[in-house]
Image (cartoon, rainbow, N blue to C red):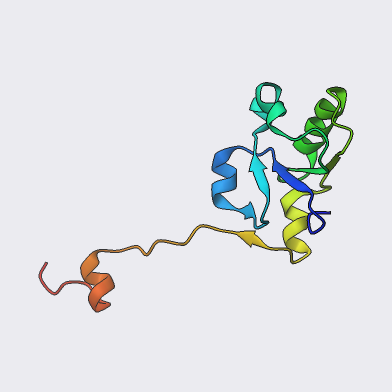
Length: 113
């Protein structure tokens, strides 16, 4: 559906999305906690896939949207957990290297204690 132009709406919280997100060209983040205030940002006539971590919050979001006339909203069953298991693309933050600049530069601790 997404390859055919559906919009992916992620209803997880920003801190969850920062750790792992769907790597799709057209998506938006509207946390479930804000959906009742922001749902009009979602185009009502566009096919929309609602997603979360495991599929529970997205079911709630789809029910809410459908009660407000969003007949083209569907749930991504099992969320990003299944998405990743299926080998579909996800984005993760770059890991920062730990240690001092000296350790990173020379690969060992300073001889001066």
